[in-house]
Length: 251
Image (cartoon, rainbow, N blue to C red; front, side):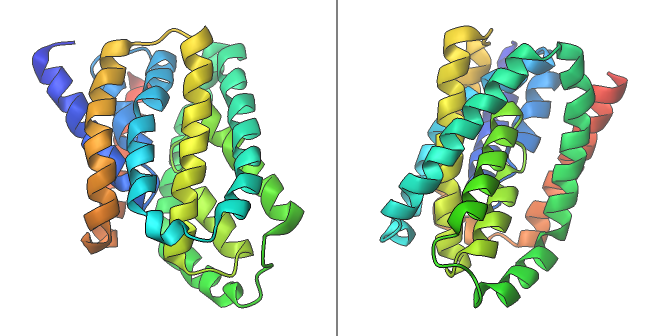
């Protein structure tokens, strides 16, 4: 990795950390950035998952005020995120790499669609929230488990999925839902990172660049991300996602 490529990867990490704290689609920036500098797609996904952990932590820490009173809920849902993440990580390692090349563009496309429809999704969630189950029940646990599998396998837009799930089943405001999402994303990324460090091929230069940027970005996102116009964030994410699909499909 050249010095300019390292700077680009670090910058992508800053953007991803900030976006993950607010929206939850940062991998749509960091993953294609790593592929663009020549990292193998599977290795890029593994390295990206590890590198984003510090950013997930700073993002969750920045929302600590909104996390008050959610400990019992997050312990319960965190178990689903942990199990799901390990399943997704093992699927990434066990399945043929060609499967990843086929599936990931589809996942990125789905993630882009989720980002685009998020305003309407939030409106639907607001209408449902007054009838939400107080702790989500088994249905939410299973939904978070599925999101964890998705996050452990790839992870782009897992935050959008989690916000959708949590907002559907919990009688809480979106800021508290977002805070919970950050903690569950941290669990998913952290569990996958431990698994990948133990058994997978890792590009540690890529990890270092992503981690350095994501640590700063997560803090910035938690503090100032709410002031960034949501349409701007969505536009950037979708454009990067389209570029990632083109890069993966056409090389």
